[in-house]
Image (cartoon, rainbow, N blue to C red; front, side, top):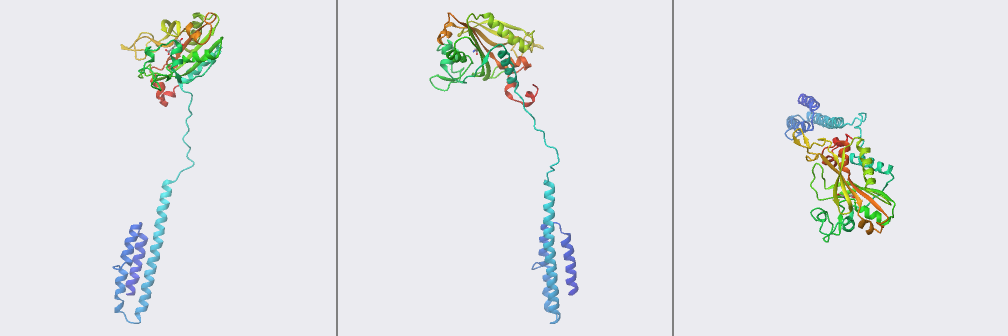
Length: 347
Ligand code: DAH
């Protein structure tokens, strides 16, 4: 029996040393120490022993059990420690690996061109002013001679805030003309850049939100020649001396006479055709409308308390995104608003 016990101890300790998982240890515990375990089986034979042998074997059996239990605990913590170490090693962060560089942003291309235009105007003596995007219909339309029932006042074109069509998202920066003339007497020479809103479907040259730069010059003896000079200076500084633009008669209720200025389409070079297809940038027109302008209507001046017998003025409203398209050779206006970094990084 002594030999049997020694044998059990030897095998048990070896098996415990070989076990490598908590589950394997638990199985061994049951097998070695459990009610149906090997040790128990040997102890059951104690009855057959003589009275002298019994306490000796009892002691031996207890020491075998104690040795197995001790080794079991030892192995349990060793396996646990090894698992923990493996987990820590797997999750270790190597603080010496260089970090991901933070990419630096820069000014949006639309704002780059807006900034250029502002600087050109400042160079010509203009002051830059700012005004509200939420505007009264009175300023956006009525005081600009745009009477009730005019199509641009329609709810299908304009975002109104109320049911009686009094407050709206400005559809143009032209109400800034009224806001400035209400406060100032001539000489006036301002530009007012900002966002405007229209219920337009987005396409290559339209967006429901876009930017305009309003310009207003009022003084004694201002003529259409001054208007042409100012706008040509802008266009040549932005696009180069050989830029092709055209002035075309038009109608605006708040200017008389009025005109529109187009730039030749840079994509199809004015032909309206790209490889046998209708040019998608100018819709085959060959020209891209850049701005509206004209001599400030006397009624608009008078409505702001400016003597139209003494003073005259010109005004213009430039589409900033269209201007940026020509300046940066962007063939679809939607790209300007998508804010895809791959696009923006090019400028
Ligand atoms: N506000 C006009 C528009 O959005 C553009 C415009 C035309 C502005 C003539 C002006 C102007 O100042 O004189 O279509």
